[in-house]
Image (cartoon, rainbow, N blue to C red):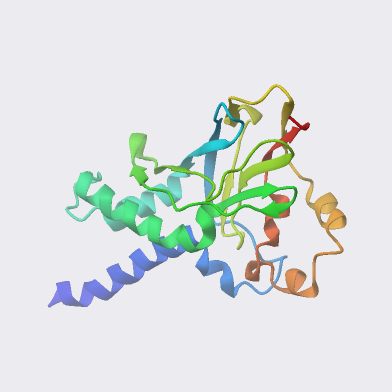
Length: 229
């Protein structure tokens, strides 16, 4: 009987973990002033460019903070041995994959300021080295994306619930950059970002920033600018 009573709590806890990745828990936040991250992760991004100048893939690595990692361990450690075996990691990977898919895997890829559709990653791997949650996956554009103009890459959480950022500029790297292109890491100042996008921001953004994807204007991004080839 005690086990039956405990099951709803475990289901609710697991849902909370899933919502943390999906950032759905922040949807109830009433204003930008109240919106702040609850989960933190250091990210790495490797952009690989093919010899023809098209983007071949984006390789993402996210390492999450100790508190959230501990929460994940408690919820997915089914046998209580204080570690995650492969079966438990597979379940965790599936949960994360399903949770963040609708949020485009927190990716922002822009071509001359317009969103680039990204294909669903073939695999998403969750690992737990040194008792910290590590997420690894690769993605690529649905259609060929050639670097012959302005393109940028980054990650952001549209609800401000999860802060995924790059601690150092060297954590964003591009391989195979065409000679006619230059790259730089851009870390937007929030006030400047709002001022620069004032014309496209609506009252809805300021009243409920979690209800749209305009928070991408605050995202750290790897910006590529190319001349005509």
